[in-house]
Image 1 (cartoon, one colour):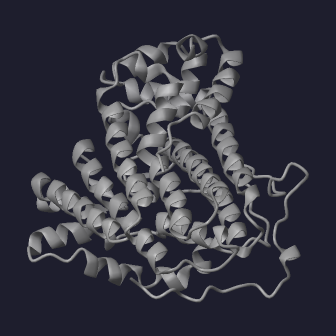
Image 2 (image 1 turned 135 degrees about the vertical axis):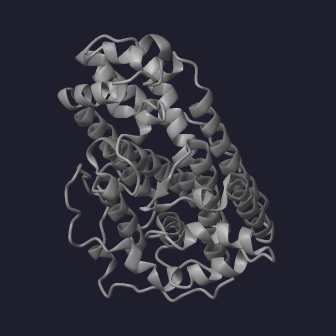
Amino acid sequence: TFADAFAPTGRTQMRHALRLCNAAALRLPAAAHLLPAASGATRSHSAAAYVQNNDRNFPDITVEFRAAAPGSLPDPFALVQPQLRPLDSSIRELVGTDHPVLAAAAHHFFERAGKRFRPTLVLLSSAAAAGGDPADARQQRLAEITEMIHAASLLHDDVIDVADTRRGAKTAHRIYGNKVAVLAGDFLLARASLLLARLKDVQVVELLATVIEEMVQGEMMQVRALPQQLLEFEHYVDKTYRKTAALMSLSCEAAVLLGGKPPDHAEALRAYGRHLGIAYQVVDDMLDFTGSAESLGKPALSDMQQGLATAPTLFAADQFPQIREMITRRFAEEGDVATVSELVAQSDGMRLSAELATSHAQKAADALGVLPPSEARDALLHLCFMVLNRSA
């Protein structure tokens, strides 16, 4: 059983845990199944110029932690920039409301948005499944819906976590109060659901509804976990999938379904999003130990301050069993956070976390083997490197 497999047995157990984490991610449950399209920039090279598959029918590329991506891979954000550029103004129109305070709170997140990672995933998945043709109007609307669901989840998370800052700025609930922030998140989810229904695709509606369900269940796993569950890697990976990877995974799949592409393309991009999302979150958990408040846009070691044990801590606990007691009490006693931070630095926790993230990033790249080589597929491969090179 997983409970037996994750009992502490030293360095051998850590390696075994790494393998089981990957296996657990593969068994996570999957759901059942209006802007003008921008002209995508395409390379003048022949198809042979793109990354080809190896004899295992995987893209012939090896993803390594903190390694630079091959120079031939295109910038994924630049590739979809013509479609991303109008996204901000479109979302502002889509989330319009007659209530000025609610509108201001709903817009708070979008005013400080980053690179639009999730919409980029949707747009690139749409193009990669189509052999390089750009996303159509419905797929672009799906990219907007995905960003709205993401924004709603962050508005709610900041209230639950009592977070003061996000991306270096005050959180919405610190400006407008908890009630308004929660209502703003609810409003975004409601508006996203309405726009989703207008796509008139039952499978896609079910997938995105599943995303919202998974995110809520993941949050409940985080706040209501029993002490023993806090020590279990299976619990950590399952929670990571639900809170972070589900949105990436199922929105990538939905993009393919909207484009009417084959089921194996949808399955491939669902797997890609799942593994990329897990790698993304593991790196995020590592940055909580190594990043500064300035680079992270939030306090360092905030996970432990919220009582959360992540991959570096769980791996370190195998070498330093005294960490386990501090995990089960959610680092509540004075000095717990500082002690665990020092022990993680002395352990193999960061190295093993890097291996875990790299394993999932490679699995994401491998999943793209069923898609035809194209510039969009190469851009998705580039994202695997970018996730492992994140600094904030």
